[in-house]
Image (cartoon, rainbow, N blue to C red; front, side, top):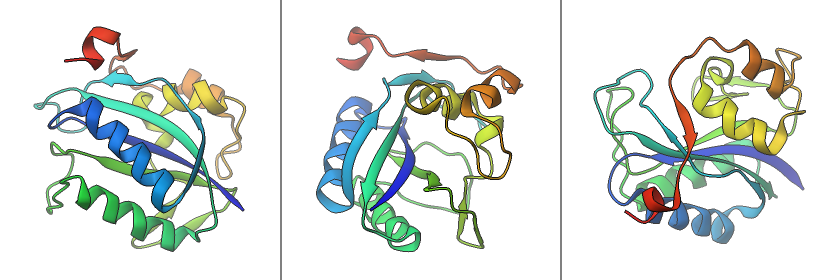
Length: 167
């Protein structure tokens, strides 16, 4: 059995419903969700001229290989209305990133694990710290908690309120 940490999030459509559908699809198609962070409201990173995101870090147990996991996650995104274009950092119904897969390091053109930007993004580190603060990044050899403390990203990341979830 493999452990994978994922970040799920979106800023288009019904964000709460999209997160719930994503969690259900992950459970149905790729593996059991064994940990999940709270849902965080985060400003858009990269292209800031778009709505805020709802993001959540999860840990799953799966029998999939990293490549097969990626294929299934891309199918889940597509099923939830994600349309990929050549433009980066655009609005999307759902984005599912593989952050870590066991302690493996994979550097292929279409799959990089650990995700190469973890240490630069508060919207990844804050929810990851909640569920795996002591996890050691296999390339940087620092815990998630340390990476969060060292992160220079100043974009706001805050827990989503019940009112925001029910909008």
